Length: 450
Ligand code: S3P
Image (cartoon, rainbow, N blue to C red; front, side):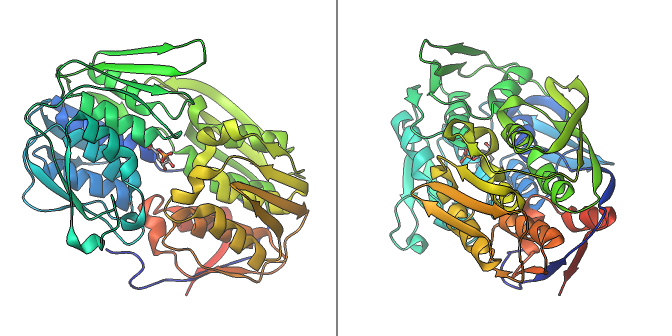
């Protein structure tokens, strides 16, 4: 379904005593990667706990359109890949809906193939920058055809790409902290002869390199004297199918975690949450703000650290969140900004440039939503300053701009504000967290769709 065509608004009302033990669905980043790598591996990949959200299901469809066999088997997903270098030209367009991760990683994966593929997406995705991945892929030999519907906007969907007969490996220094850019270049390098190297001055989530290694790709990772990571892949190796268990998504968990901190009388435990350090910046930040947040039963699963997280209602205080923490919590700023509204004192969130190019301009839209609900805040360049007073008036109607994390964040605000908070649409929550409303209601949250 195309989100935004028929909007379903919702209202979250002041609630009490959110309690319970919940499992959030599988990690979105790992789910996309498991399908894409399963699609080019030889043999069977079995994925347990795949996130069955619209974004990930679009990636599953794309992988099938590229020649892999993808099926659901009970609660598992089975992928029979084509083998590396053996993807087929899809018969139609590849539609990635709302998903920047899906489209950017898939473009990298198919870039070395000498056939034309057309990529399309929804209104939000069609306004997001693709040049950040097309430019390094062009250096490798990719040709890009801008389609007429993109109205002359450079490097935005819809567009078609075609690899050259002979693609060249490159060394690419990623100019912005982006795991999607890193991943697109590495996935292209997977099927280009020679060594492709990505240099990332600031570490971003490392699921692509971990999973490539797990599937058998030859990967080498070194950190230089300046702390930059050099990730190299030897192209045209063989990948073999794997069994993958997807841990709970820390980004989805963050909504129930913040709700548990700001709604009076709450005590919530979330099971099996991914605790990869490149994803846990929000938990560090909330702990610094005084959150009663404990990590329990830390353990290893499928090469990743996981654990349970327990939160209880807490008095939060404002802090400064350093810019270098942004990559490890980039998707969590809208809900952190909500938490900051309930904290005492000023929270400064620095270095949020990348928030401007998410599903919407998340920095501006978050600030607008806070103001509509009576929170004193200010955008200072690419930083967000929130001046919390310990309580939030609410009563605002928030426009979500096709952004799932904006919708969920402001519904969480409404559970703890003095008055209800409404959002104009909830349909796009299904892109990342279809179970959100049911899980929150199961904890005792008063949220109504209308
Ligand atoms: C993701 C990387 C991040 C993040 C997105 C998922 C990934 O995007 O915001 O939700 O899975 O690689 P950027 O690479 O644009 O920072």
